[in-house]
Length: 360
Ligand SMILES: Nc1nc2c(ncn2[C@@H]2O[C@H](COP(=O)(O)OP(=O)(O)OP(=O)(O)O)[C@@H](O)[C@H]2O)c(=O)[nH]1
Ligand SMILES: [Mg+2]
Image (tube, rainbow, N blue to C red):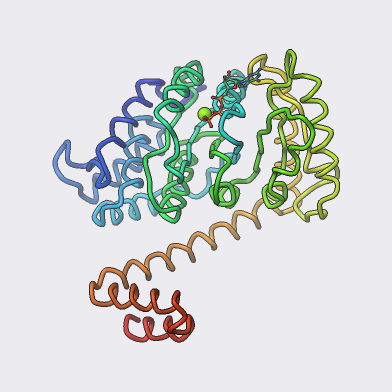
């Protein structure tokens, strides 16, 4: 029943190997003699066939910032079928809340049902310590060895815009490779949550049990994009605190404005324990129920359409800006105008109009 040839942990290692080659990245085409149109077609065919090495190489290609790689990546993306859809689940939570442990337990519970699960990590802050990466190797050990799973660690990165594009493309690649579920993990700091929510069908927020006043610390904006709040570590001594925390979040969610993308009862707050593998089936059932409802109501397709359009517009905007900045004289002018605007010596709109007149 599986189409993916299993490589498991070796694959993740290969992926790390590729991404550790530095900012320019490694040219996935050079190993066998120069990138050509046929090579990209072959790579697309490998991805579509569910070949894990092909998928890892394709993701490496889309992660590269080099202009020639970008051109190849665009051809690759254009060659992918558009009829395969995975359930894209965004997952966020503060450091130490148990994201890796949850993904391991939840991912394994899905693969146990025969589902293919891809895990992509997004870390625009570059705040990820060597420790967490080591932690992931042990915390996702079972899943990384699972032939039905594919885990891609986050590359080291700089700008959020570039991260968004790469992640979006990696998600599409996993989808084209036939994965049923794509989990997009991000650490709960900065704008990355909004970015991930903007490319997911569902957004899950992982929380830790707290003493009661931690609700204040949760940014309202994050609550507003969550479809499911999972209070993790609902086990042992932490269980009573987890129950209280869940009730607090459930209360807070009820106070939020009703969203058109929700059936009755959503967003929900549930208890889980990644450690004891509790509450995972319930969480999955709720995710499926929500996804089904959204499909039936037409919201799923509308959301994907909106997301695709926003991605297109962001690409055009980013592309225009990098085209302008590629001209050193204009880049210098943009910098000095930016300075003038910051210091109140020039008006923002007028300065932008000047740049666009000269560069456009
Ligand atoms: N009791 C209990 N501990 C847990 C549970 N899930 C995770 N932990 C522990 O919480 C700590 C952090 O877990 P991780 O899975 O590494 O958390 P994370 O969110 O991935 O952390 P970062 O990658 O650093 O952002 C570890 O010591 C885990 O063993 C749980 O369900 N119950
Ligand atoms: Mg982690």
